Image 1 (tube, rainbow, N blue to C red):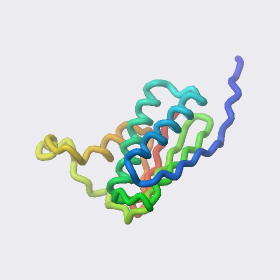
Image 2: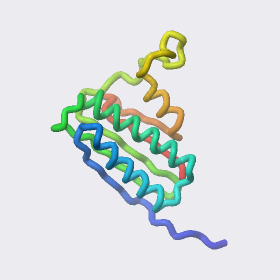
Image 3: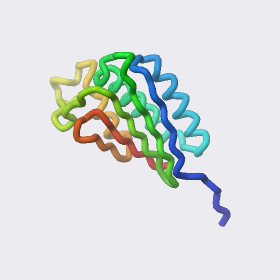
Length: 140
């Protein structure tokens, strides 16, 4: 059986100013990595959704759209997975006590679904103790 030679252990890093236009740089990086490592369409869609949500939350809620504060995005490509880490310079939040977006009283709200979506689309989702960093794992 022929085995494809895939370089692993590569690290990619972005430092984004806290403005919503920065999402375009993130999308370019996700596409570059997905192309290089032949990421399937479903995993690509889940990665793009989760990362866009996490970086938007970091920009808006973490750094309060303060362009002097950065959002750091790291992607570490391993043999069968990609681990993304998104860190903002904000004080963090209590990710253990979020309202349930599927509860009847929250269904009509326009916000409050991001963490729920990310937890369901990523293969693994880990917050640091402060709540200003999230690690997302995707099997490839």
